[in-house]
Length: 346
Ligand SMILES: [Zn+2]
Image (cartoon, rainbow, N blue to C red):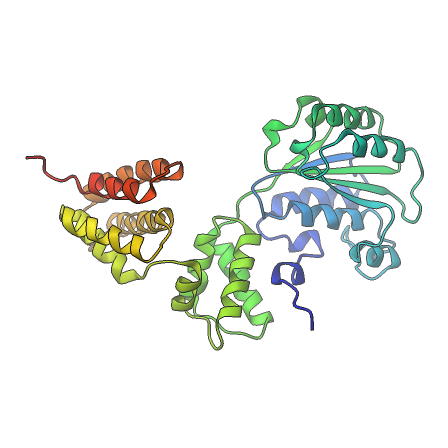
């Protein structure tokens, strides 16, 4: 049997199923129900937040024979054709690999013809900011006078790179990073749909690591499920994701707060020897210190004082930025931790 990636297997088929993008779903559904669908949309937002999924659902919604409250039925011939990627009238163009003017010229000629099978021709242009200036100009010509039977849906992670002339002809929707709690709940749902079990802490680690991207969260879950037999544990997740264990983290935080430079240097040495990702470690440490600060503010007893936690956060955030571009990550991490430790200078 062929293995289908979880992200594909559970791709949403209705706008209402988009995770964390209710503001987008509501407005699009209103437009569909009142038959006020625009000719051109641009979906912007971080990677893996559902832009392309939404575009595909829209292409079905406008062509569905029996839409239900604006949503595609998923069963009519049009829905099936489009879902199978077999419709001649729904065209996906990946601008990242088709930067050329030729594709846009073809598009400009193609839009003149009536759809072959569906009610509406839908052009989905992914990563639209990658188009060349000439290609943008060709696209603009089409957007200026779009034929009645055509709809454009563009998606981009970098809207500032799309010419204003294009943006001004589109209805824009901003997709948001998805909250950790929402990602967590979605992962829980997928685990049970897969007939598996996972302890909560393991899914929280994945949700945190995905940084608001649904696709990343689901792909990470996929990897972790493949790597484990029984219940998915935080331990498996940590080892799949290359995360250091809690005890080590605590020891490093302690060393920093006690100004113990030698222990810090040894700790970093250990990370390097195990081939760990330095930046990932720093981010984990940041998360830990932040957690301490939150606990302190809510009146709980904590390892770090409030003042100490805030100062460490400032130093570590600075270190994280330097580490992002560092060619010597080990040294940069070491320096950032020593700085956070505020060693007394004699
Ligand atoms: Zn349908």
